[in-house]
Image (tube, rainbow, N blue to C red):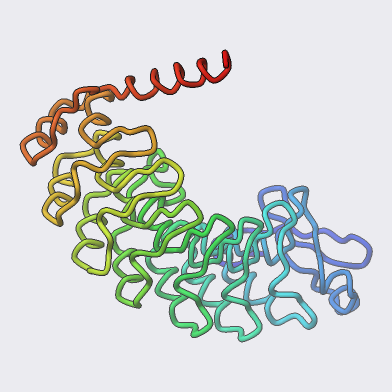
Length: 313
C-alpha cells in the first residue's frame, strides 16, 4: 500500500491491521473493532519510542496518514508523548512540517498552546517561518507565552532558533521569525526568570540582523542588566567577541560602556580578558576608560583579606 510517497506494509495483530514503515508502527488500525476500543482512542502507543500513530505521523510529516487518523472517532488529538510531553502539533512544528501543522490546526479540538515538560508551546519550537505563520492564524496563540525559565517564543527565535536538519544545526537567529513575531506585537523587551531579554540573547550569540531589528523596533532597554551575571547586551557581545558591527549598533543606541557586571568587570575588561583586541580598541574609541585595577583582582583580594581578618577575630 502506498500513502503519499511512502510504501507501507501491513500486519495483523489481535484483529487490528497496523501499517509499518521504517520498521516502526506509524499508522492506524483499519478495523472498526479496534478503532472503537478506548485504548486505541486514547493511547494507541505502538512503537518502541512510545509514540502513538498520530504523534509519529506528525513527527515524520506523513500528511495522508494524519488525515486518516484525524477522522477516527475518540482519537485524542492532544495526547502527548511521555518523554518530553510534546503533542502532535508540537512535533510537527518542531520538525518544520508546515502542511502537517495546517492539517492539525484545522481541527478546533487541537490545542495550539499545548505545553511540553519545559513549558514550551508549538510557537517556541525552533522558529520555522511557515509553521509560525500557520500558528499565528489561531487567536488562542499567546505571543508572549513563557516556558518554565520565563523565555518567550521571541527570546527563543532571537537566541537559539536553530533549524533542525540545517548544516551543523547552525545557530542563526531566525530573522523572518523574529520579524513575524515583532509585527504581531510580541514584547521585544520581555524579561525571563534571569532578567534577560531577546536583545541580550541576540547579542550574546552574535545575531547581527536580529540585534538590528530589535533596536529598530523600539521599546528595548539597551542597558538592561541581567540578574544572574549583571551583563548588559553590550557586555554579552564584548565577552563573546562578536562582530564589531553588533557593538557599533549598541553604541549607536547609547549603550553604556562603563557598566560593571557582578564581578566588577566592564565590557572593555571582558573583551580584553577574552583576547578580543579589535573590540577592546573599538570600546576605548567610544569612551571606555582603562581602570586602575584592570583585571578586577584588587577587589577580590581585598574581600579575601577582610574575610581572613574576620576569621582571626
